[in-house]
Structure formats: C-alpha cells, structure tokens
Image 1 (cartoon, rainbow, N blue to C red):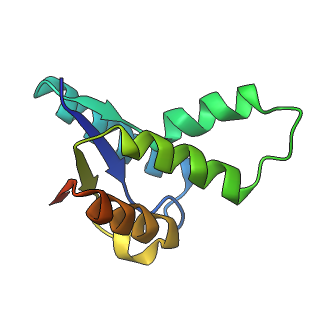
Image 2: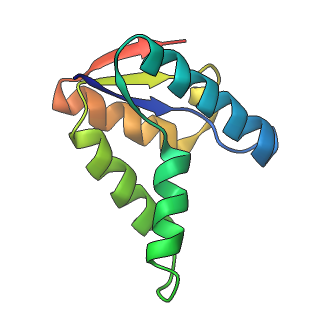
Length: 103
C-alpha cells in the first residue's frame, strides 16, 4: 500500500478547524486506498510517549521527517506556503524524490 504524507499550515485557523481539515484529507486518501499519514496523529502519539521529556520543535520535526521518509507521496494542503514546517517537509520530500501533489 502506498503511503502519502499530508502537509500544510497548522496555525492560523484554530486547532479544531485545522485538525478537521487534515483529518478530512486523510480520510479522502484512505478511501482511495492509500495509507495516509496525518501529522496531528504523529504529534498526539509523540505527546503521550515523550510526556516526561522536553517536547521541542526540533523533536517534532524529526518525527515528521522520519514518517515522511517512509512515504512515496506528499500532499500539500492549500496555504502550505505560509508554514515554515510545511516548506521544510516539501523540500525534504523533493530531495527524497517523492511525488508532490497539491490540493
């Protein structure tokens, strides 16, 4: 099963709206037969695992990029350009030779 990583801006619209947007994209790709990686799921899992350690931006980005390494495609949600993290993810994906799909 092909893996697709969902990337986009996570701030600016409020946590619940943003989470909903990522979840809807994840569910859409799953219905098409992909294993869709939602960074919010990674973040939530990491928060539980690293609850006694400093939860830094660098730690989160390393987790995201590690997950991205296992994918064949990155899906860029509209507005990704405003997010430094999404720009890093996109550049990393390009360097890995992943297909880049834009919403």
